[in-house]
Image 1 (cartoon, rainbow, N blue to C red):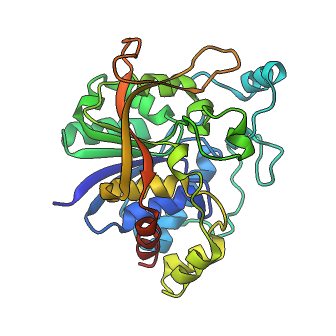
Image 2 (image 1 turned 30 degrees about the vertical axis):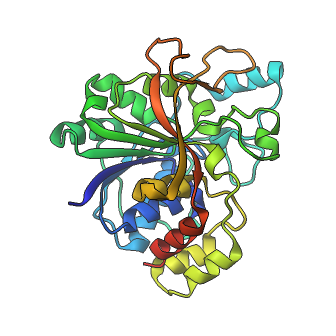
Length: 330
């Protein structure tokens, strides 16, 4: 049987770790992607929706609906973040709110032309959260929820239907940071700070207290040292498929493959060579640790509803890169 999955992603593009992970899931041979929900994260929702639609057109997969989700986090705002930075120092990365970076802007409704070409298809009229709840009720216990964005859409679905998590087969997400083995400035001084949790901590808290049957966390720790090398993309470009040509032109070289690792390890769990169980939550204190990952060894958790998760610690990189390349050549 083909495995049913819903993708929740902030589909910033073109290509990028976000859309490259989506391509892996779409091309996996035994996977049925029911839909792609998009919320604001790395960029504003509406522009990301258009990047997702265009990728589906390029891949010939316009049968998959793109569901617009949340435009803003549940509580956090650019103004609140600016006030926090005045007290606690500048964040290294702020996603859609990072207006100092090229290609970012303050207006969430601004949708300039895409470098890969504008889509001719339209997103679904249904919201992401409503779609998640409807699909879960229609296929109880059959759907995996794969998430690599801030948890806003997932939290809204949990609030729409408190039984929604119980109907989901598993939650597999990219997010959180524990002790990344890196000296990258984003984590060197704040190893527990990860963008997906930090952008919408209140949503993360809701999701990390929901009654999921099974939870797998693919944190920064397991993927931050991976790299999308020029040689890897050259091997993909040789296939000459529409996706391969798109990645040859727009694929990010030299960047960590955060979301791709999370996608590949859901597609093939045997890629994971070391996993640890722990209880996880997010810090909601508005002090210096706001949005940071919290974790406890089993038996040490505060027992306030935190979820127990399988936290990935290491993968078989010798098998990961060929799997990525093979699925991107299709």
